[in-house]
Image (cartoon, rainbow, N blue to C red; front, top):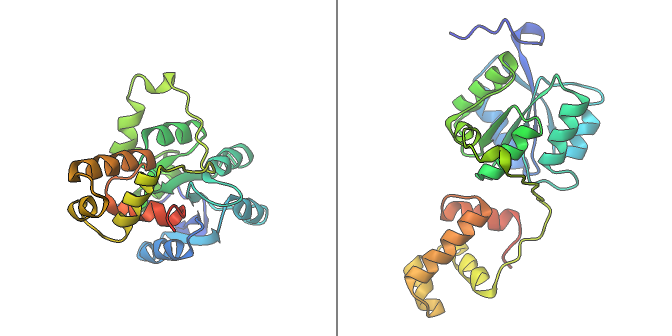
Length: 226
């Protein structure tokens, strides 16, 4: 049983904020964490700008922060929070499964990095750990941090840059979002199924997602299809 003597809040509760421009996702996270009575969500925000305004009047112990958001993205938000409020721990909660983002965000002061398909039990553990030790390292993050060439590579991601797709890439992505299989797409586009899979693999690598579901989610969130 985990003892919460290290909590910084009253009644042994860890105060948590969540910032994400998708309200339904925010509400889903909050709802899924209600079973953990030692975690209390005190704040929600649509983007980093709104969050920073709210932090002027109330301070959480931990912030769950998305990356791609309007006005102020998660990268700038993390940098500003760790500078202005070093006692607050920021856990990135995002769909970007990209080694470069992990390394860059940890350099910016993030205390942990989780993907949006993470189970609530791991989110709970991450929250407890960052309050207790200052950081949370899971196998995904460890894999990045132990790479010898990581520190030699500088990566300054720009989440607001426009994603440019070729006509063929856009057509494949559109058909994937319409739930067509690779074989069906190959017939519609008069190309081989192997070419379709190669385009899908290339898009997944660019977007930092693992499967067709991730492609659909990314395309919808970033309005890549008409």
